[in-house]
Image (cartoon, rainbow, N blue to C red; front, top):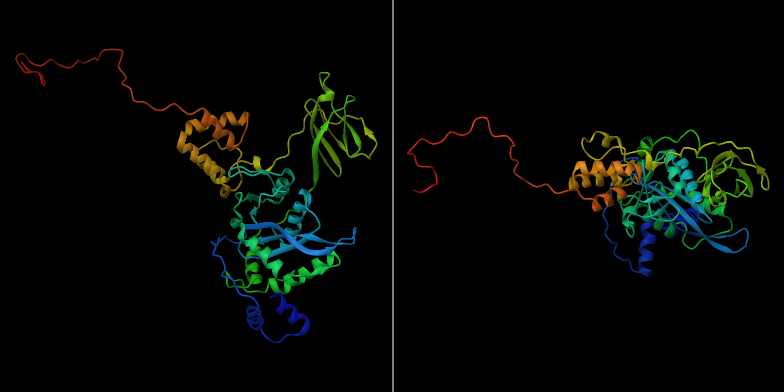
Length: 412
């Protein structure tokens, strides 16, 4: 396909693709494709993201060719893909690539299916995976729910896996570029000229036509972009200050003499710094490196920023009757399975036992894993049948049989 496309663009090749395909088949044998199940989704419901190997590009610092990384976001309904190139990957770069892909699509899908890479998932889990805080907040800003795949199960996001293989085999096969922007321009031209106008092998329809149907179902972009921040653990010095980016910020002194040992999490952005320590908390604006800001601003610990994991169950769960308590934070999407697992616990241990476990979890650990472990270690008492005797004699005792009659069941 890549050879035929280059012949058409560069040489004006008038013959169709079938002629080139038959010629290439004579040079190498064609292997039978492996069968996979096709996952059908509604328009605007799902998008899949993944990394792949990009082309070789000359690095501006070293002057040597270096392998780039290819980011791909594919919509589940129309198979419309956004392809972006980057030199390296980090949590912020991973989140920024999502934002650029959303802006190119003109909207966001409801669910993002991703792999368990470190930039997005810190701890893989079937029920409640631990997402990267920055990536979680970016998706919450755009109103998207993350749905990580099971470990070792890439077929769940087979559409983006197929898109990466299509990109590597077709436009980027054996090519090298001198600049990263030149490689991105070539990839964008191929995407608009060939990828969007092709007839997809599964749907048998044009990708651009299906994306035209799917675009109105995408969620609207927020009016403001996400405000990025960095977070880390900082130690409160004996003078009551913490160091962030070579600058010092005042914090509320501790009640005891253990200020130097107190440590907490500091969150800083381009304009402000927020410190949460064990006995001190402050919020102040960013100061130049090497300077100190001693004016105390915050008197109490700031309220934590709401995240996607603390918004409660979906609206359909709030009217489920005597199921688990609705205040237990779960994923906002019922497809994540967390709320269905709570219902399974209610069927196994009973609604009353799950309500009691959820009440404990509200104070200690509001997660599904905590509730499940609590029920396993504190199972409800089994129900037994026992005879209850009345303490008082009956008001109307049974009449005695008449004299001379034979009592039932007794021999003379």
